[in-house]
Length: 422
Image (tube, rainbow, N blue to C red; front, side, top):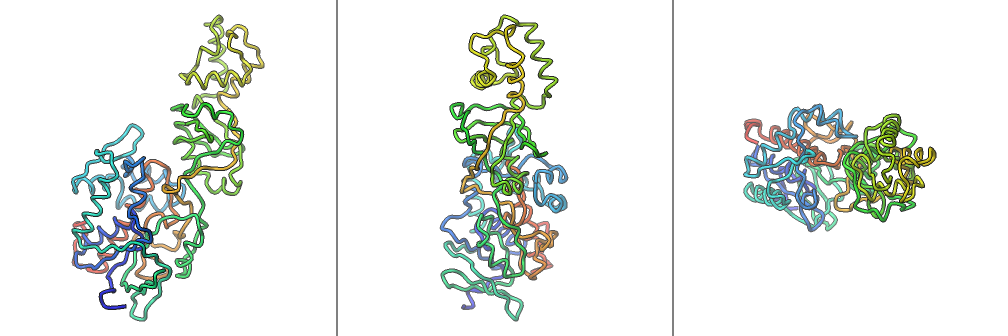
């Protein structure tokens, strides 16, 4: 290793948290010599694919306690962190760099360009302007402590780098082996398992309705208290949509234990009780006795879905409300509010994979994101045991944790530099 291979800060991981941490550390202390190491040949991969290529930067939730409630893991710690840097700070950060964000009806925030390239170009431009070095296809496999308090970073291609400080932003991985080098540093790794996934319907009885959705549904895992409300989408493999994906996050550990084999109960009409539904349908029978049932969709359900639910209740295409049997009415009610799906398996999207698990937060000083095990090593992003619901929350935790790390790194490296410059 030559003198040129010595850095004030090495960021391991060229994703969202890595770039945000490096840029803010360099802004705070322009004298820092900073290097980003990325193991693949692509930078900012999740930024590129997020939100269908539009980049769901954050969520329109500007109060720290309310924002923290969207995180199945890390909620307690993030509540405090968000007091330092949260969604409104992210919006301001990008706006000062000429990027305005807009908010959609569900709270997701995107660049007005509707293109992830806007965010990527911003990061690459800032990194270049701040003279941050970037090396791709360099996989870190080990970090060794040196007698002088610095660290020696070893890579798969046998190149070595020296660092005074390290920021680890390697993201999540389904493989426990990906965390071995961090475990060697003394950190406890919570087993990594998937979060944010869709449900595979074993029987595929709704397969021909793919694309049908309801905007105010409810889905529950039978025999548990895991329940979510919101849009539900029928796919060719099973069930998807925001409510399903949120449920997968909150129930990630339980579903892993069940080997992703369970019964999901769908309430297609949302927050309506059985008694309320029965009373409503009785009033329909009284008010419209001659109407053909399969043509009289209730609660604004898509007609294809309504017809299928009638079929499951053994209501044929010519049956009118006055002729419906008690047995068929009970079946219709059951399938409207507790429609069972036998789930066996899940579908995750490789490039957007989100991990439940990672470095135990008990090993981290969450005020600075510095390791309690190794002084001078900081963590940010999904490598930590932090994960949020879908909707911009995982990027928000990446921005927050990397900002706090950058603030601590810059402050400790040069106390004369003003924190307000970031």
